[in-house]
Image 1: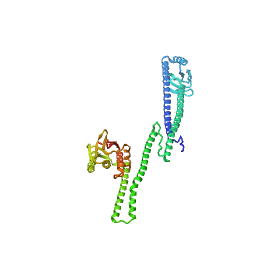
Image 2 (image 1 turned 90 degrees about the vertical axis):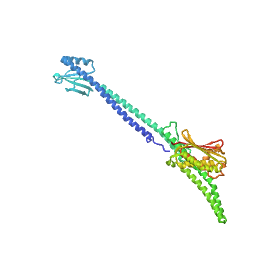
Image 3 (image 1 turned 180 degrees about the vertical axis):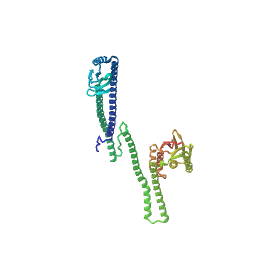
Image 4 (image 1 turned 45 degrees about the horizontal axis):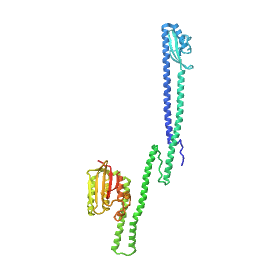
Length: 441
C-alpha cells in the first residue's frame, strides 16, 4: 500500500490552517498590546511633564525669574525630569536641556529619546521640561521579544501537534484501507477497525461494519436461496421432464395426451408459483413499498380476513375465534398487511388437525399493537421456530401438504418492512404467534 505524505494529509493541512489563523490572531493581539501599552506609558509620561511645567510656570508668576532659576537648579539635583530655560537670543539660562526649539508645545529630542514640553514665558523666554523615553522603548522591546518568543513556541507546538495528529489520523486511515482492500480481495468476513476513542472515524467505521454485516447476511441469504431453489425445484422439474419424455416415447390416445399435458401444466404452475413468491419476497425486502404507506385501520383489516377464512376453518372441522379491539390504526401497506394476516391464518388452518381451536386477537400492548394468532394443535419444536421463517423450510409433517415453504418467509419480510417483530412461542399445547407494530392513532 502506498504511504501517504504527512504534509499532504487532510489532518495536517487542517492543523496548518488553524495554526495560521492562530498566528494571525496572536499577531493582532501582540500589536494591540504593544501599541496600547506604548500609548498608555507615553500618556502617563506626558501628563507628568505637563504638570511639572505648569508648576514651574506658576512659580515664575509668583517669584519671577530669580525664583524660577532657583527652583530649576534645585529640581535638577533630585528630580527625574530635565529642565531648560532659554532667553530670546537662544542662550541657555538654566537647566541641562539646551537643544530644544523656541516653539511652544511638545518636542521629541530623538537623539536622546526625550519627550520635551515647551512653554512660552513673558519677555520671550522659553521654559522646557523633559523626561527620558528610555523606559517606554525598553517596555516596547520587551513586549516584542515576548511575543516573538510566543510565536516561536506556538509554531513549534503547532507543527508538532500537526505531525502527531497526522500520524494518528493516517495510522487509522491505513488500518481502514488495509481492511477495505482485504474485503475487496474477497475476505467478506473482515471488518473495519474500531478503537475505544469512538471519534468520528470510529463511528463511521462502526456504521460501515453494520452495512457490511447486512450485506454479508444478504449474500449468505442469496446463496442459501440459490441452494434451496436448486433443491426444491429439482423435484417438480424432474417430474415434468419424466412425464414429457414418457409421453414422447410411445403413442398415446388423445385423452392420455391431455392427461400428460394437464399434469405437466400443474407442475409448471407449481414452479411459477414458487418463483412468484420469491419475487414477492425480493420486492418486499427492497423496501420500495414504504413509499406507498398510509394510515390503515388494522382492526377492520384483521376482522375482514378472519371472517373470510372462518368458513374454510369450519369445513375442515376447526373453530376460528376472533377478539379484535376496534379502530386500531397503523401506518403501512394495506395489501401487504392483508397478505400477512391471510398467510398466518391459512398456515394455522392448513397445518393443524381437526377439532383445533384457532384464536386471533388484536389489542394495544404498551406502546405497540399486538396481533396474536394461537392454536392448540401440535405446535412447532423450539429448535425449528426460527427455521420455519427461512425460505423453503418445511417441517416433516408438512411435506405431504401443498405449498412451497415460502408463506412464513413472506410474512416475516412484511413484518420487517413495517418495522415490527414476529415471535413464535409455545401455546401449551400448540403454537402462538405474536406480532408487534407501532400504532398510529
